[in-house]
Length: 520
Image (cartoon, rainbow, N blue to C red; front, side, top):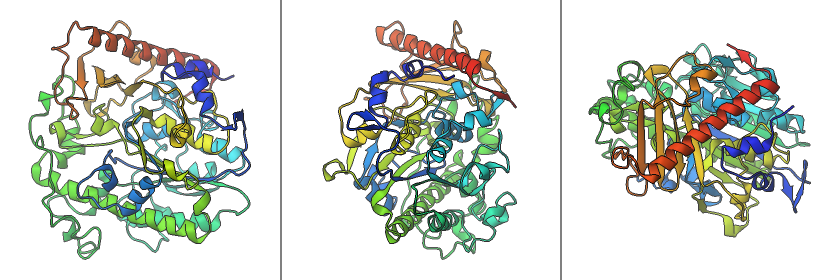
């Protein structure tokens, strides 16, 4: 038995009719298998923040191939990740559900199981006749399927854990030891070509590519942080990872190395319990933050090169006119802003992600459009299933983006619930709402491992709140909580956030009655 789709979509502020209108509709009728289903490639990067491509307004990064896809596709400029930390985000991409409902996270009490995987987009598409493949960082092995993920796909060249920039030096990357390439991103490109060479010609394919870059495990393993990465003899003369961007005055945030407690008090999140002292040390000094920025954007340019090679391979095989490409990242990243590094917070820099859909069949008048409606990463899952011509399961909580890609009139959400339940490194529980020009966030002391009762915040006073007017304060520096205390605006946002939070808790309760859940 599945939960009512009507119940699931209440939390997104979207009508059930709008969801059905965006899912698998062909000439107004629901169709599980359109006449010619496209190939679908989902490209997922790691820690890539929004606006980090040239076409998205970045002033100096070079991304001509990705820019070309965006120029001929549709970009979503207000895309928010459901869970802004690595593995929980990936579980949500696969299942199309909030962590609060599927229950699987770094610091939760549960792990993913076969029953839940059976409702993931790879399993659904595979069951409907797609040839499925996965390449790169699987990212779920902390919960289940360690060493066993290959059975979930027709083609698998992935890895458990974090890779290194030179993956043959990592014991968890044995899948790549036969590679002709030395660097992780070209290894992924080689893997894409291998997949295209093996994919059968008599069925459509769905390929998920989970890049490791520009994650800190990659930037940090290029070379020691105390020197420029091109001091590594392997990189000195490399066209991308050598001197690229070293001849310009790369700007770093003014907040770098300053007091982070001006923005989030130490009693709410102590930077010395993991962020500043262990995990993101390079973003807490100006010299290393400068080097981080160079390596970070070099890796994005390296990604761009592989995407260009992928497009050439698709064209050579005659697949370029029927292959949809969807692009996203598992979350953004703080790189010195607010005096901090890292993710798992609801600032735009950490919770927004670059998102676009490239469909070569798109009419010319729709190409190059930017849509500013509020989009969730859960919508990406729904979109993949929709392009596959399969009706969305009731468990999924997103809404297909296809109607927006095509420019059709569709009822869409005017608010979006945000959450981060990762409590490592003294990170608090955080949840909030983005509505109009406003973003409201409330934080509660974190518990690990948490259970359902710990994320039920009913009748609990937040330990800290933030309110930003994004129309006047896009950098989210001016917390208006005190200034607007008692106002109708703040009261309405508080109440709405509480309602949506309670709704997700109720859905989790119903979910556990109708689905198998597995303790860690």
